[in-house]
Every structure is written in structure tokens, then in C-alpha cells.
Amino acid sequence: MKDFKLSADGDLVLGEQAVDADGYLLYYALYPGEEQSFITRTPSDYTKPMRDIKIVEDDEGDLQLIKSRLQTENPDWRLYPLVGADLTDLIGLPNTPETAYLAEQLVLRALTYDGAFKEKDLTINAVPVSAFTLFIDIKLRQGNQLIRYSGSINLELGVWNEYQLPNPYEEENHATT
Image (cartoon, rainbow, N blue to C red; front, side, top):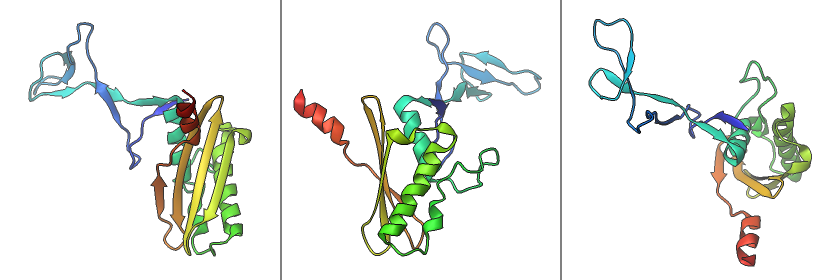
């Protein structure tokens, strides 16, 4: 999957500065009094680096899509009114196995919406870990690849904390080589 790269804050990320066939950095130039801009190799006060929006694909794109959908509340996207997980719907609920199950269903709905991922490729586990904290672990298996994304939501405040957990399948592969 290809998509625009987003920063942790959800902003578009710019890619590397463009270069010409000889490897020189390229700039857009618009000098005062001129009507058209042009491309140059020479930076000045009247030039801006020539860049495009960075693209993500494959595992990085899948991980970004998972994060985006977990952070989206419906109907944030007018064209895709059900794309978000609506995790803030959990705020104020008791931190019980029933609430954990509801969280799993919200995440599953968001990740399978519009065929983004197949249910058979996903493992979603939510577990109460403290009085107000619900831990959510998502594993996406595609072929031999495993993408893991985990975090916790505070059921009082709705704050999401992301975790970097080890991938158990990578550890198995290192142990056998």
C-alpha cells in the first residue's frame, strides 16, 4: 500500500530534496518582479528547495494506516464516515473484560473497514492493566511478515500511549539463524 507519509502529529512529511540527472540539488526560484518561477541549481534568497511529499508503502504504510485509524474519531473524514476506531467512546466505561472486548471490536471494525485489512490477518487483544488503563495489542500478519502495534488508552482521559514491543517472530528468526 502506498500513502502520503504523516508525522506523529498527523502533518504531511516532505521527502528528500529533488536532484537533477547530475546529482545537483534543485530549487524553485521566483525573483521579485517576475511572473513565473523556474528551476535552478543555485540557492539564493529567492529560492526554495524543490521537494515532494514523502511516500510510505509496504509495512510502514500498513503501520501508518493502523495508527491513523486508531486515532480517528468518526465522522472526522467526510468521505469515509466509519474509518475511525472511536476509542474515545470507551471514556467513562468501567475497565472490565467487557470493555476490553468492546475495544477489540472497535479496532477490528476500523481496521477492516473498506477492506483495508482482512479479519483473518489480524489478532487484536485488549486487556485491563490498571484501574483506568486498557492495553491494546494489534498484530497484522501478511505472509511471513508481522506488524505489531500496541498502546494503552486511559479510560478517564482518553489519552493514547503508544508502545514499542518486541516482535516475537523476529526473535524466533534470530534464534534459529
